[in-house]
Length: 172
Image (cartoon, rainbow, N blue to C red; front, side, top):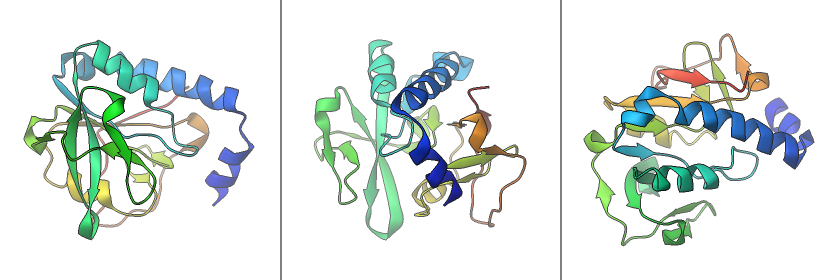
């Protein structure tokens, strides 16, 4: 609740500048440079705006996958070639339409995982649905979250089913 309140106080310019710094660092990662397929989330509300990042990855020749929420809090990744292929799901979050091909988890090289907050061990607080934790269980590729420095903590509470990311990038 405190993080959501803080986010509502930030100006659009502050959010854009933070997003720019975070995604610049993300794109400079050697794992991203070497990746063939990158899965990213579509930022909504006060999450980082990933629309420009998606276009940058496509322009770099990467296969870009976005998540699709399924029943029973499951998720799959689908490849897009344009953001025109995105349609709102039942939460209002844009996701690939049913024509976009499913990409097997093993074929995704890097996953950009969303968060509200992260800690030093890579644990994150998300929106509370557990979709990513279920999908990431058994995933062997590279996982990263971008987290503004004011939302980074030394330690966050987590449960046995939470899956930490391998790297947390901040804008500091």
